[in-house]
Amino acid sequence: MTYVERAAKSVVTRYGRDPWAVADAIGLAVYEMPLPGKYRELYIGGKRQGGGRAIVLAPNLTAADARALLAHGLGHHFLHTGNRLHPGARRVGFIRSERQADDFAAYLLVPPLELTRRLSEIDAPDAYELADHFTVPLEVVARRVSLLAGDTGSLTPIT
Ligand SMILES: [Zn+2]
Image (tube, rainbow, N blue to C red; front, side, top):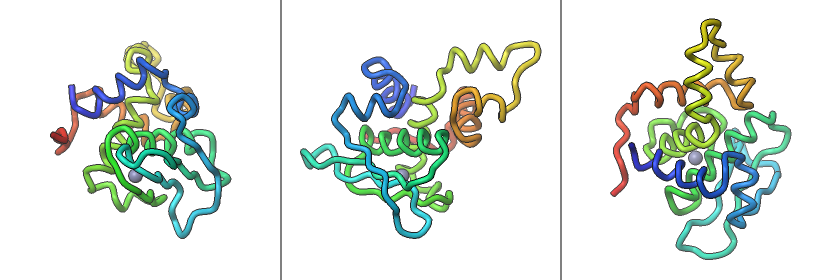
């Protein structure tokens, strides 16, 4: 089990899978306000900085996008420190901390047992149906299926 999966598991055990409930439980404020350019999510503050931690989401996101971006920001909160802007595009996907935050979101938002069960049904749902069912963007389902298959790419634990 990777560092990221372990972190997500411990969050799920303590607070459940709803990113809004997780943010609420840990006292992380979530604001909605316009962000510059393509940015759709901003995580402010790190674990070492004490108060003032918050996540800002761009307005007018779909429910699935808002959940995924909030979960991604929670990933930064639990895994990393410092301020991070998150572009709408995947331009920063190669940066390890961004990939880890995306993995964290996939682990948090998609329960593995239910995913496995649905994938093994005779009339298995396609990725679009799964995304709809779990209220996440398609890329989150794709990432979770890939993680389920043990394809963690070049990810290595932070030590
Ligand atoms: Zn990010």
